[in-house]
Image (cartoon, rainbow, N blue to C red):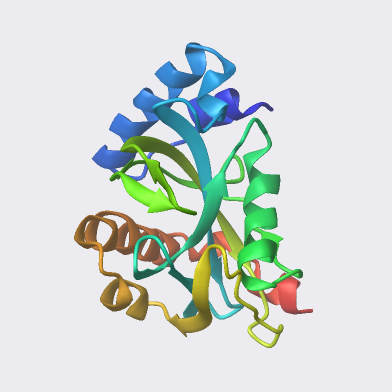
Length: 199
């Protein structure tokens, strides 16, 4: 199943996801340029990584946003966003043994359209733009060694789930996204095959 079909079949969790799903489908229908970061609205992915008990999540201290943040990155032409998400997790945290969890009818855990304010990156100005973001759910072992990715973050750590909200400096992300991800995980705990993963 390709990404567009998976998004089309995805069941939104709330009104935000329903509205954002339509925006993403329209972008995908306009051609492949939305997979390139040069497009004003382009595809990205995030990976909400939890421990086998679903009590902790893995965060990085994001250099650009100056905030504790989930892990993710740009598609940069790739259409397999699940693979991109796992790669970003490895690159940004050093975690190599994570497993994606199937969520309902597919691998997508969450959808969101994320506004990004203009900022400096590697000495160059990046104009304000929009991330058409697909989020995946992964389970990883907190005993795995962690390392920073100096280009992207300055710290990596596991935190209690609710602390993800308290640690974020971004009110909209905190209340609209992290709160949703935590509530969704609690509501659909059967998605996470903890006993299978740890056996």
